[in-house]
Length: 497
Image 1: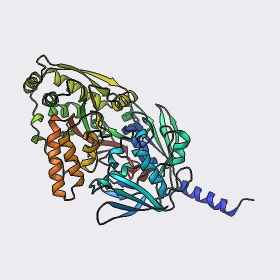
Image 2: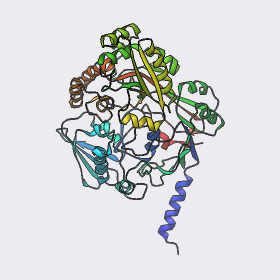
Image 3: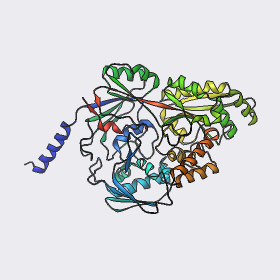
Image 4: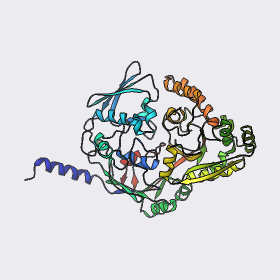
């Protein structure tokens, strides 16, 4: 005889299912490059992981922090101890209750050297993380650290038993988020299904998310027109122009925090010489690149996104941003390269805008004595060479952050977890530390202004542009919001009418 408990559970599941309708069909350009939230760096991975894992806090569409697994926190008078109250009644997708020890484990995994996490630098100031009980976690930091809270969304909480059973999380995913991993068919689709025990009432609004891998932009656009797909995240500028006037389709646009770049390996000639790095910047015509690659839907950008209106300096403050091939040639000669230099640009081939930018930059550099070869690689090979600093230079996209430290510290600090350029500048390190310790907003703004000026022309990155991020969806999609961070967080709010 069936128990009343089982009957009640079945009714609850049936009610949950009836509150949702349909599968949201997305068209994306590539499969995820692994699923480990503590290791991956690719946007194609995070647009899926955003649905599976939670942090203590999360970033909303207005770039403000909101509670996630934490419901609130207190800070000690000396600013060194943060005590978080955790949400109760949360379970992982495998049914196990979420507890404070899971936060401790996830932190320890991120900072462990053997993990090789690109997030590790974000938590370098943390001296301990403790769980006095199942509903409380306490972070202690070595000294006042202004970006601490802004970094917490990057601490995705994982289940220790899943790591221990599988060795890593690249092919499995068990979180606390609104959707659960159901199936991956490489280079075809990734299917997520709704979490019936998600802790936010009424979410998610659809029964499943299906990320269809459709490499060609024209095919993605055609599928949106016909209704085969409901939503295309990260629409390239050329396709955005064609979709803007299509009936039944809504095109969204927002200034994003990510940027396109040419990164330089400072341990290899010729980019071990800051004069050559400055020359490369002088050789790039960013205004021309914005028109040629982005069809005008971008702005030339420096070390910080113009979306950070309180922090980013206007680019006319950077002398090397005035395109001048003759001055670039003169600098090359001064550096000992009167006949120019040759080098390879390792290029992320899975993003059309990156390939286009690399080719435009290649042509511009040729006018200044740089003989650049564009070496296009698929995502897996690119990531491997990038992580190993196995490049002369590379063309790619870098993600942004709501705090300037998130852009600069792990990227440019000596030994930073994403400092693949092998860049080391004691003066920059000193400024980075000062920016983290400063409490007064005006003092911090002055420090990050100095950092932008120090890095823009002589640093290891030639910042190219900050684009308008386009997303297109059919009109039957309701509830989706864009975020400047490229996160697809608001897929959990989508319903299909």
